[in-house]
Image 1 (spheres, rainbow, N blue to C red):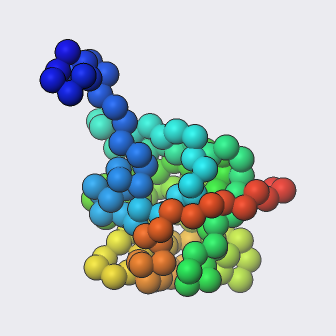
Image 2 (image 1 turned 135 degrees about the vertical axis):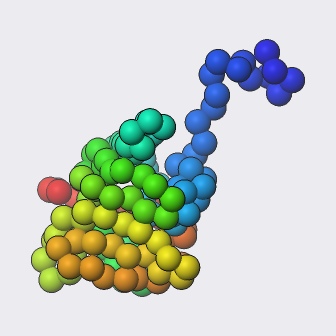
Image 3 (image 1 turned 90 degrees about the vertical axis):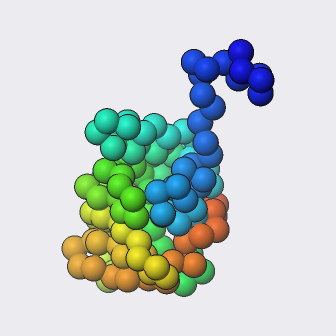
Length: 132
């Protein structure tokens, strides 16, 4: 046992908002009601599990929809090859990537749209939706 009471074998998982912050992504990118997440250090695959499909509105009036499982390839400042997330441009469009740059969050979804990063810094509740 280490002095803090944790065994060296089972390291406690950081909360997802802190984990995202370590990778220079907004802390409030995912809804508050995630159940768990996994990150494979070797492949850089992030898998986020969400209780039910939901929709999150952000303070800049943008909206993201989340399926019960969202996956992507995580690198510093970006999440690529995203599956399980949509955004509304004119119609609901599949999100394929997210990357950050200073004060902007770039969301790729059929076409690129830059949004102010501060809109995604607060973790928000997801509103349950009938279909993803």
